[in-house]
Image (cartoon, rainbow, N blue to C red; front, top):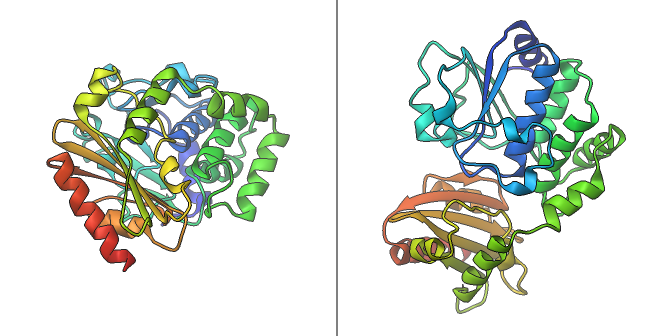
Length: 321
């Protein structure tokens, strides 16, 4: 691990950066990406942002959203590469990961527990509620003025990864950072409207499909929903990945663990885990080569949707005995 000050010094010393976030990007990934992009750009650096999957339209109010590129648009790989919110390099996507050679200088900035620190420079703080919290501290260490546009980006990162400051990862430090971002010009009304009160019709249709397939364990402590590839394809939502559908499972009285199984392509199942109790779903996800946080985690498996569901649900039942 490097200190925050050392990461700040190195970033200010070099130039020509590529910032990468993870596949199926969420609010923390996107907000952190944009916040650091503007911080480096304001410091006179040349910076490119790349995401393997498109950022959802709800984030188009954030400054710089339209400048995020696809891996195929990147002709030359810059010499300095910053992985944000990625527990490992592969989380950025196979296409871009395959193009990074051993000569690149890698920065690894994250708040997830990692099996190994894969960067030349690493700052990983599992105690941070969001990577956006780390970027806020990093920009301060770099003495970059956090203008309103940057504050909007980091506020979105923090509010989305804390579930609107309701998840147990929310700390007093989180609230102080959020307050600072509001003081610096983050628009709380715009964030609320764009992030929580402007759901696209397609998201509601996906939610309807998922709720149609909701199931419960005999004791009511586990709830799970599933979305098959063909069903999602039929409504034209293959490239649409809303963040909040899984949360409907843990809103139910008596449910301690909620899951969402989504077949993202034939034979490839993305698994979401949520809990509001004492169960550590990150530990369960790790059994399936995934990870995340104690109350919110994810994994990916290959196989038949029904078989994967049964295996994972049996594992959750075993853990909850």
